[in-house]
Image (tube, rainbow, N blue to C red):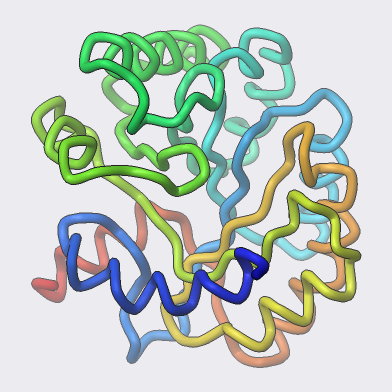
Length: 227
């Protein structure tokens, strides 16, 4: 069975089980978050930025520290255009398989890489999405202990296996609802299609009345409404 068919079910189970994570925005708000994992990539990310600029869409990027170190100028370009930045680990190893000190090191190395590339205070970069969306209760407890904010997902169209642009877009449109948190990829797996996917997806979502906001704005929305 494809992961894309399972994620809506997993979302309904995991969201109430781990309520301290950010899974989505408010059901009564058309604000949605468009997020991209595994970058920055020297070709795919700049192509994606052109599309986001065209539609004036605010997005959020969850980066691998190794990729930031390979493409620091691209990282700076993303940040300078006002997009939100989060952590995805240093090299995409599953957080559940890392020892405590290895997980801490992976996050801190990624923070430092982003801080160097974007000329930021490392403490500014607090949002973390586990690679492959995999985690354990221990993972979440450690992230909170270290003052990170765990960010998850509600719409995962499995773009990294490249099922085709139209398939990915159709999966998103079928699942989209108020508050949705969409995961796409601009890295080495899935990034080949990300600009075209975004080109086709964004106008449809705008026509449906959705508003694109950052992950930080979803957190703020959650705090302001006490949920």
